[in-house]
Amino acid sequence: MLSSNVRQCLVRGIPRTGRTTITSSTRSTSSTRSSKTLQHFKKNQCSKICLRSISTMINGNSYSKDLNNRHLQLLPFKLFSTEADYDDNFSNDNVQIRQVPHIRNVAIVAHVDHGKTTIVDELLRCASESVPVMTVSSDGEQENEKVASGSDLVMDCGDLERERGITITSKVTRLDYHKENDVEVKTINIVDTPGHADFAGEVDRILTMIDGVCLVVDAAEGAMAQTKYVLSRALKMGLKPIVILNKCDKDDAWSRIENGEVEIELFETFDALGANDEQMDYVTVYASGKAGWSTTDIDLAREFSTGEKVAKGKENSMTILLNTILDNIPPPEVQVSKLKGIHKPDEEPFAMAATTVGYDNFLGRLCTGRIYSGTIEKNDTVSLIPRGVVAKDINHQSLITSNITGIFVNRGVLRTDLEPAIANAGDIVTLAGVPNNIAVGDTLTLKSNPIGQPLETPPINPPTLSIEIGANTSPLSGKEGTFIASSQVRQRLISETDNNVTLSVAKSETDPERSIVYARGELQLGILIEQMRREGYERKFYTKKMVIF
Image (cartoon, rainbow, N blue to C red; front, top):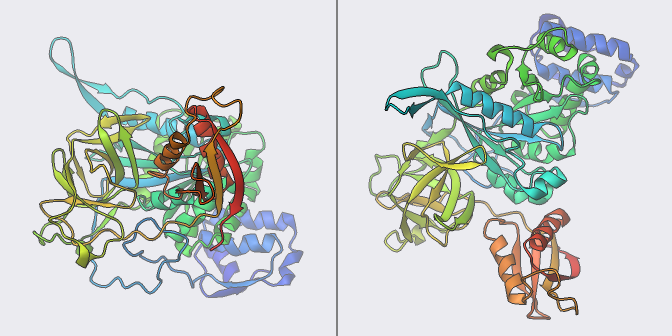
């Protein structure tokens, strides 16, 4: 038997309140009755929070939980969160917040072969078709032209990623989407994230740039291992989720959707990962990335999946998913009162934290990140504030400065100039011409009106493994690779720590020709070793050890 308040919710279609106890007597509920209860739940469109208790009943578990004791906290203004919990007592008084309504920053999370890449490719195609571009014809007249679709497999552009079917490095792709009946074009930044816990440093700092997460799930398989780590970190940071049930047209997918198996598995996953009530009330989008359709209507999804109806036109394309992102993912927020310029307190200062750094042979030093306040233009002079510096120790006259030589965004797999060359708060961009010694977590601000302190960057997750790596000293040295000297191997390892902040390198105390590499896990070390092999580095490996703090 269901408790009275859950039963009333099933009948009235309203969220339950108070405390509900699921007792062992509920275990006698048959699978048939459970299926009917779930169908009755969907028919009345009850709050998904109720299904949290129903799914527990169906699986025969017995516990009592207060569903109203979790609240979505407004997170403090912190970046690069680690495993440390946020302070629940953070005071939000007198914080002035400004939203950026035309931008959405969202991460996409999926297990291997669940269709993430195909969906992103379809989103790129639909977004490009919605935005006309002015071109000049041969006779000098301007004409409207649709943007061509991007290249396939945008999110799997690395050789190792294609071979292993996993995401190793995060990637950002920008969509300019014009929703029907809207005046302005919206910008959607889609961020791909690694799914393995070994890449925790990459995941944590990437999640600080986004405001929501899209969970792609194969309807025939359900939520799998690689999705759970990133999803748990996103839920812990209070991000809003959207669930995409992909591959609904597979043979055994729709039967699992109709009998409620997929939905129940998802609720159990969200519950186990600590989702609060607002996060549990997510939107479900039914889709087939291969067929190119999506819908939030379960009846239409059934017709498309079984072949009773053919999806045609924009009303059933991936534009439904784009509209769902715009409607349900909150826009970026700028906490105006948190950042003040020291020279012009009344103006909003420019502040950006370096999320990833890199180097280009033509452009020089590059930095990618989200702008947290203010604007930046090409040729502006920026100052670099190192991570972790105390405000009272900052001498703004002695800070390293440089001129921004370019502002870029990623469209598909291509890095293109931002036109016009001005970026505003809430956007994710790549800056060229930043100081050469910039590191992940450092803060960039305008020299003319700098902020008084760096953006907060909590410590990076500590390593768990170490291994000694040296040059190949065997008789076969030089047979396979071109870089065989120990100094070359060490320099390559040090360069990896530039952007891979969870790696660290030190000289061996027993042999100066060896280097000790500290990492988060075996997969992270394995990826690094394979990359070095393909680049032509010959190296020898020694004892692997656990790192205990």
